[in-house]
Image 1 (cartoon, rainbow, N blue to C red):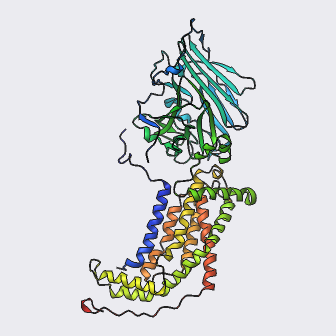
Image 2: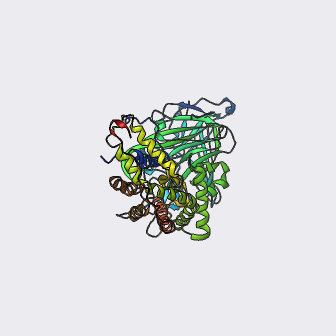
Image 3: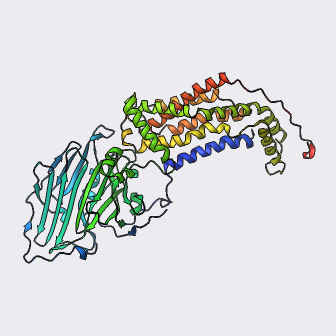
Length: 568
């Protein structure tokens, strides 16, 4: 299928888009005061394109002579089951269904987390399995087995307690062994795979295709990535399905961990022996549960040795939980590049307020927003004083604009208009950007709140009053929070001193709340709640400021009219 135009161009992140939107609005607010007229590459990891293996076929990789074993004198016995079995493993945190056909995972359910429909999260894309295959299938590099080992019936042995499974299959020469061990109350498992051909170790990878995570989430496929952490570069590298549209992308190195993730969940393989290993990013066009239309879903193949030995974490990206498994796993929770230094402390504060005071993240957002606005009060007071001075100067600014109204923008005398206005600002100590300051002050916190609501598992499914999930828009037919936000934005704008005397420009500025409402209507409820709370606090502060500081007296118009020929 042909790719859409410009698909190869890197997409702007939401963090960049929000910042750009606010910068453009700030420029409109600032520039209109003067000119408005009424009429880095991956490092230390080998990255290459390799031919895509088909889901039910085997790929290839050179034999590892270091792992080569001496062939046994006598042929190995044949090992296989007579019928398909579906063993189940249940712990406090997940329920797993496996099949001895290929020794693969058929279902991996996280019991403590629900989808939007209220069902436990199933991290295996069931709709993709028929085409892409099930997780923990085996793929090879430079070896073509006589049969498809992912379709053979393996003999199953359960360990005492039912939390361990061993899968074995052999045709007398080729032998495949998989070993899985689970622990109650833990998202961590141990997995070992080994392939021998005539007693010689055969390099192979374990594959998880067709996507990962909550497949019912909004735009699920676009928020799923492969990942690996390169300690040499101290960097977490992530890739989407589109990176592998022309074939798997392979990276090899002494990685701390590698695997798959979506916004809130991860499946990561951590080498128990500390040796270097390989991860391939794969792409499969498959359907999801919310749509029958096929779209690219990311997949990962991990391993590359004759014997792969991993600790496997499949669970939520909870900071406390990840820290207990491995401190480096905290990298999975990405608080952003530009404003991460605000987003992470903000999350920790929200978490503390929720745990110790409110016991509800909605009320925690309100409390923290009030605190932020009061901490910014000194800067708001400075901004308000500048706006009052600007309002008082509007008659003189209007007179200057009137004097130059018949001069075209290309006329050199037009520069004199800006010079006079700037001289007027300087004379009265006015900062022309002061009116933009309240909005500009909110940008870092706005993006930080957006990031926290996007990546923090604690926010997923958090409710507040009628809002069922603060990390998503309201599910009711008419969303109340955005409408309240528009109303309070109008109210606040009416209370704020006007920085322009032009009635047409004032009417134009009244459209800003509608623009904000359009921007906020489809974002997470927690983000709208933050902005709405900020509006209410600003209304209270503005009422107090207006009573405390009466309007500045209007400046006397002292602008000499321009004579014909451009002389004053």
